[in-house]
Length: 456
Figure 1 (cartoon, rainbow, N blue to C red):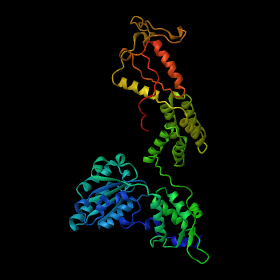
Figure 2: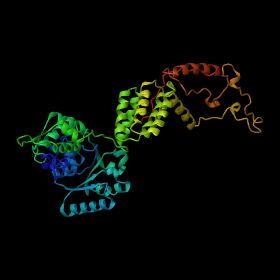
Figure 3: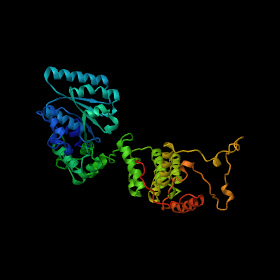
Figure 4: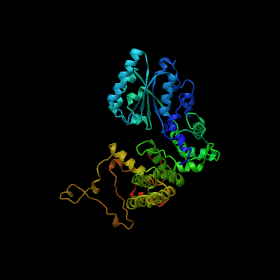
């Protein structure tokens, strides 16, 4: 082990030691720290009633939610109480509220309650916060990595300001790393850092300050002092040894799960195989269920490609079967093949739009009676009711198509399927036009399908 390692062992972790004590030290999030911004007012000890607004901080891990809450509490002089939704229950919340009320009434002390991972609270647990927030017993600062619109109850949302944190920029992270190297709370100049090492730490952190500082501390423990016993130098090789891969922002139950799969499908729809492969790689590396990816490919083949390429759907199904048979890591190959094929082939959502239009008519009461000549005539008494009378068998005609009505009377001239002129659907469009003429229905030449696909 390096001699330098002893300088950092047995201490509080570097990210905790470097946590800012005031808003001025906070890296990034400048859109939330402008003069007059809610957090700045909340941190002002002379803010008065304006400084008693509860807030919900929403952002990825490592962007400073806990840091901001603690900095606000220190700057404002308020009492700070922290709860984690992982371990706290309704009883804990009520005890904090009662204690905060006592502190306010007896000593005039205001309390900031920082609740981490509020999305893990049940509705009942979140409801227990409402009296304290509404009556001003506490100023709630809640943190979440998931969209509060789905994870926080409406009454609590309406009583709080929602503030969105952004991933730290490369410049923010580089400045934070440099400060940690030199600051007395951090490494206190015990090591130096090459430009390549700094760039590697920034890249591997993926906007996460905690990740950057954790990796810095691990890399510093590998840096040997120079021959004179002076400060060791952290190189890119030290960083590579300390951190084997970049952090992927991906929560299989959270926003990143939905955002990445949405971008994946939209890249296929947009015919960009490079982008589609990028998002596929992100899902694979994050440990996404390959069956989920395969199902989305099947849906994409049916929804966005359709009959412009009739081979797309069987290929997507084959990729799903292949993944089931061989598993990972080899399963990434058929998934990639299907992704590239779907992204580069012709696209049509005509069948998708057609079935939705037909369903809309049915739901709207436009079903109508089945024409008598199409009704089942195989049971006793059907002929007496006129079922099947006048039905013309298409195979008796050399063209395989005969003129007769198929749609109910109320919809007899309704058109649902309008093939495009893309891919194999070009031939379908010409054939469908000829069929319509034989059936005696108004000819509607194939046109580019209007409308947009459903959001993924």
